[in-house]
Length: 271
Image 1 (cartoon, rainbow, N blue to C red):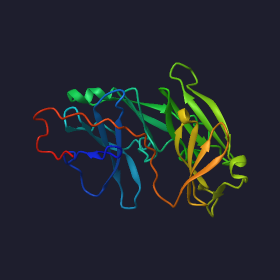
Image 2 (image 1 turned 90 degrees about the horizontal axis):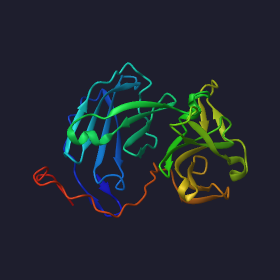
Image 3 (image 1 turned 90 degrees about the vertical axis):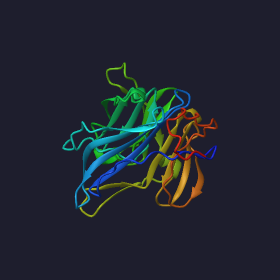
């Protein structure tokens, strides 16, 4: 666990990972405005020799409150809809929201129960793109603003990005908040490409992050190999950095990690 802003880090206890036949996706849940504790999740998927990944078979869960790992193995690996994506996740109001491979989101509820050794509850939220092609949905990106979950994804021609907000009290749940013209921003309309058989769909840009409080979207332009910011109000693009990298959006937190409970992990490295 590392805080880039303070350059503080802590080594977590080792996990009991299985053989190479498993594939892991790791997520961090931390919001100092809600709790000083952080949580780490290793979603374990079965992986076959051809590289195909099945559904989640178990989840290793770490709580900094107890400074230990818990294992939740009450998962059905045959449920291929629960394959956790490496796309951005959101920790919001004690709920962890992660993208899955099948047009939806897995929600782990009430993470504070890990502090007493009880795995969190779980649920699912349907993507606003349920009625569209799931290939488009894999380019979507979760975000949050003012305590509300948001989701952004391109339309099938790539010329427009839609931004939805989620309302758990509303029957339809998702409401379109913004329609952002990529045609105007890039000055072209040829964003989408297909493979030779016309099956797989590719878009020239990827939504890397959403920050509605700063009125920004962050995009990676595959053609120019540049990270860009897009002003939601202005409709203008600005270059941030060149180069093909795996970019992660990070909101700096300058508060130090809480002091460990006496005797919980005296043998761990703390910097």
